[in-house]
Length: 443
Image (cartoon, rainbow, N blue to C red):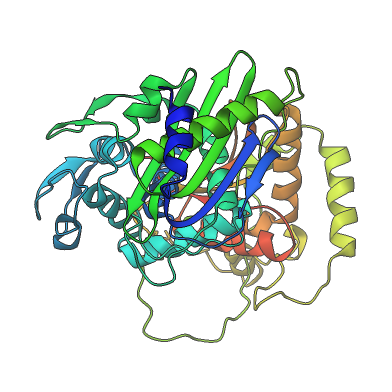
């Protein structure tokens, strides 16, 4: 008897132990092919771990943490109930093994340890999960923890979890194979996939994530591909693995029947980088900010700006002319280079020898930077860097411009900054409506 036949046979006996919801989409475009109660807020259970893993991949991508970094397990993480890897408080384990355990075995202790390693506490990590969810358009989701154990207010919908599954598939394809592994090495044990029955029985199935709690029932976000078609189906509220998998198989079949053979891909927009910027200095007072002269541009920067400088200056001047002269949120506008009175110039005017002062960074080194966007060509990225450097010459004159080619385009970056400088530069740029993301030191 096939999975669909089993589902039909058991349907009269009551296949759902919790409120039922379902959604099927064409993963290539996001088009909805079928839905039932798709916006009803329900318990997501371990579907939550998709977001935990998504943020882990994001953190690795941006250098917050490395896959081979050792994570110390807290008492809280070690005490999480099953499903678990069996971590002990105080032990150290590489992040890559925690990711494997959370993705394949759905280990609660591993998921909590991931959140604490990235954000310092599970509560802070949950706040980051919610920021990322909002950026993805998951408007009816609220996360309270990293593992999906039942907690008041920890809710989501079939539509939101399908959205998250699609982002997981297309935003981090290099990690997606994790979800199709029947088993994997998790460092201290070899673990089996909680979704192995569907993976082995449904042609083309290659992920994504199961979930179960008593309050939620048996949940699943599943993706399958056949030829050039790919479908994602989500089910909330199954009574058992068998009935849930049978319904998912039925929905995937329906999706492949309704999805067109050929369609133009419309990939989801990757959400903005959602890391919390934690300043290293502890301030005992909060004095009113006072404008101070900033040094003029270095010779190296002036030389670097010769590329397309005429047109770039024109554009920068036009933009500056439209901006308000009133400081935004207490941030003074960057002075023009010709208006800046440098210490050397002041000393020369007074007939004194200039005093040379070496400024030490309080952030532990100039290993930070900012990203001001991703573009379709190197030329576009360089042009934006040039315009940004001219516009914010007071805060960026010591930073180095860098274009980084990625599979998704060319990233425009300023590097070689102290942490505080990167944070200040982003505040100034964001206040004027520009895109800016701090970049931490590489692991």
